[in-house]
Length: 349
Ligand code: TXA
Ligand code: MG
Image 1: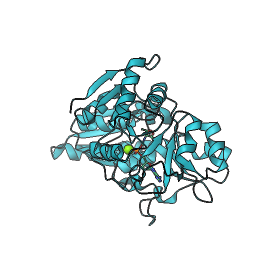
Image 2: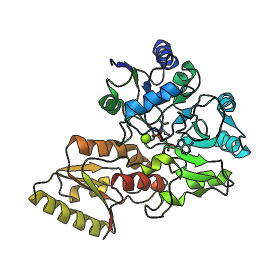
Image 3: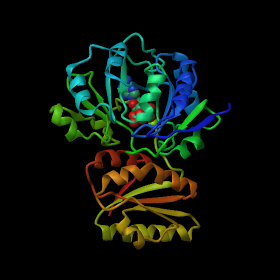
Image 4: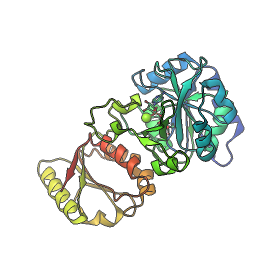
């Protein structure tokens, strides 16, 4: 398939390009597009065939439900039923923005889009290109992250092209994603709201509106013995090709430990990589060293994380060591992605 690659100015999206992208979706095709979290791979959310095409393009199992993206509040009532007040309260505070809410679906949403579930995940993104594109596409765009299944979500157009060129109809190339981690997912179909995936909208922020929100315990520990409620959380995600270890401890102990490991790996002829705060970078010995911003600056860390993991692959690094980041507002979201990338290998020194 020939993929049309169109560069779009995020401040003044060319209406002709947006229209063309919308037409592709309306006629059953697929378009990758920028959002404030990560790039999405969009298709018509109300068409079972489009959902099937998305799964095929990503190489993703079809029991993993898709998020439906809307561009105004009025669109919500066509796709969801029995909408609780909590949805409107959260929408007033966090939409448009990086929050996805799970609610009961209407008959208009095919089971192919929801992976067979009777619930639907809805997100109203803030990115202006995303919003205009969704409107041009008819108002309902199903979109997972625009990576091949098992790769880190793409936060820049270059990585979307790397994964999707030749597999979809069109790619809208905008700026790098402002946030760089996927949206927070909160389930509002149970008695009390539960975070199924941590993201830029934190537990504390949600609790300001709904004090009874909790974090799904299944996503905190790998061995919690519970099945994750966001089906996508069970798949191996964000995995770089190299074997990755997260190392926790005082800065001094972490640096000593990682340098011992990289020295050992180099002797065995393996390429090594380190992911660390900017301050610590020169204290490491490794083939590839990538800085994640100042210690404790979790927004910069989040913004760089997926690109960093992809970069380790581009550099063919075989052993990756990451300092446990020094907390910050987005710590839950970052640790969730980092531990997945590391297959939950966390060493305390
Ligand atoms: O920021 C984002 O959310 C990005 C951009 C493109 O909007 N999208 C994204 O989609 O991250 P994806 O498909 O990579 O992740 C969607 C997650 C999966 O873990 C899936 O299992 C969960 O949402 N999910 C979707 N619908 C659900 C539902 N009805 N119930 C529970 N989990 C659901
Ligand atoms: Mg994804």
